[in-house]
Length: 499
Ligand code: NAD
Image (cartoon, rainbow, N blue to C red; front, side, top):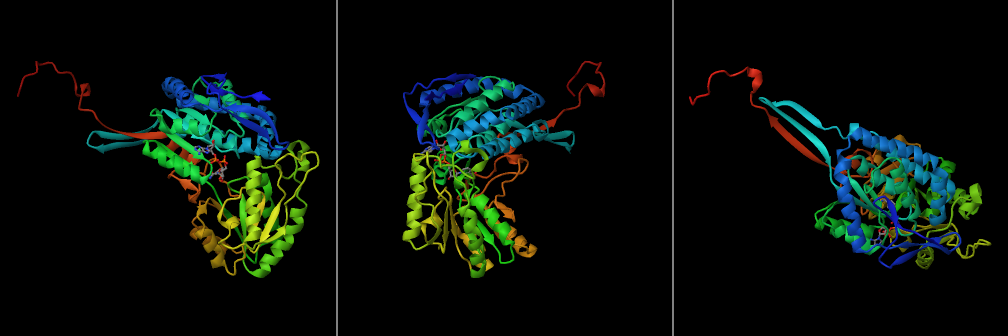
């Protein structure tokens, strides 16, 4: 049993609230540690420390701040295996997937090495007679981020790397399910040269989140997690005058057109639907084949692939396709939703219920499920399941298929599989979803583009990472300057008199 800590002012600090949460090993179902849940006073202390550290950090020139990011990239690569192992142990995902989690965060850190260029302002020479105008981007001050369990390395880095590169201090409140990697990242940032107090990790639950939401010194809040909490944090944070961006849940549709390469589409669906046990906000959870013949061909290709999936603990290495889900509660919720699907008339083509793994009977493993004949009114269609459950909704036309994705309340990601450029182009133009794949099932944009959904998948305007992050973590100040003629006109030798 490991007692975890907070990371405040450059040191591991024990919790003082007396409240803790269990940190599980999802593969074995055992409690492997406990994480302290911060009180309002502990959050306030971290904010005081951050507020003291931030001005000096903002005064460090951007190139030197970028050098800390460069060194941090080196350290992430040095410790990649260690980070991936710690991540898999608390989250349950496979080791290669855990390394991918670190890697996609690292790529945003690499982008942030461009801070000197990204923070350059704008300048208009001679905007009026003798008048110049320039805009600069300045750090906000103390910023904060609240992150979900499913990417405990990537999403914290998506937030703190740009925030810190811009000259802010950052307080991270990671998920209480898998807090170890965020603590390790804070240590590595300091090893990379970041002054104490600029990046702090405060572990906790709603109490810590509420303390962040109401603290007057915190200027901005980034949130990634489920939609109801996103909505709450956006509303409360904005009402308290903060700059807030919140990214919520998803129900990502993949349209399969009759002309698609069906093997390619089936392979794509297997990875995107069942990878990470379906616990990805960019997972495909709804397959929409167009036409019954396409649907039959697709299901025929999917079934043997699903039956071959290997589910197991990360310690089984490369032999495993996906691991357990994060908690017993998550597993119970998935099983409950599967039952609603059956009760509401969907056809369970692959039944993952009663999946049992010898030696891991107490782990939170869920077998793969495939539903066919799912309809719009069913709970398994309307709600985010966040598990290894793929629903097939049969559409009779392209219009019906695109309409399904457009009418759904979530709009994070979507994909179309087709050989028809015209259909793909029409889909990309009309769809009201933030991230679109054309024959690409999980279209997560790279670090130098931006990440964000539409509709109930997002609250706020600017996206994560890329140029938007540098806007979110800075304020624009615009200066209009006029210098009356001075000594360049020559010396004045007569005594000045009133004319
Ligand atoms: P969650 O909403 O339960 O928790 C997210 C964070 O909010 C955690 O730090 C948690 O401690 C905190 N929190 C939980 N309940 C709270 C409450 N009542 N008040 C204040 N704070 C609270 O989400 P999760 O289960 O950790 O993550 C899974 C969800 O995140 C899924 O819905 C998934 O789609 C979503 N997600 C979205 C994106 C995206 O970019 N859109 C990315 C990853 C995950």
